[in-house]
Length: 104
Image 1 (cartoon, helix red, strand yellow):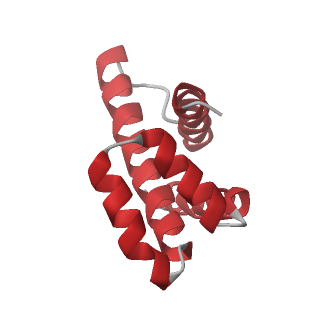
Image 2 (tube, helix red, strand yellow; image 1 turned 60 degrees about the vertical axis):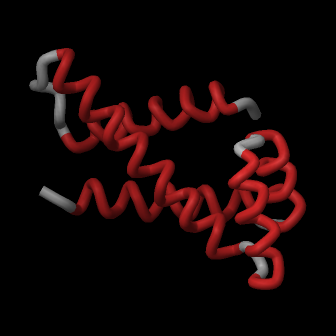
Image 3 (tube, helix red, strand yellow; image 1 turned 180 degrees about the horizontal axis):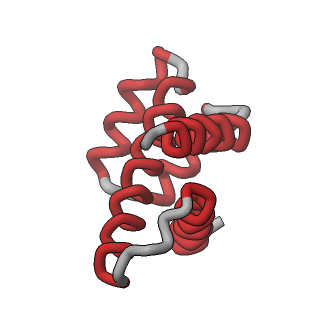
């Protein structure tokens, strides 16, 4: 999956959350800013969940890859070192959803 597809899917997920929460009264500009903010927060939560799953002995190598700013290498590393990646991402999104829908 490309980064663009991931972003698009995440935006759709956030739009569904807003609909579930009943947030449909915002003007377009505020809505866009809210979606952007929630997408960033969800991405941060996903990244934290992924990092938590990387074996300790591999973290230094992962940090070096991040410094190189090579998205493809980072994705390859994560795919190789986080065997349950889909489950980790899903769990992070379920947690994000529960936290967002549970807040007022």
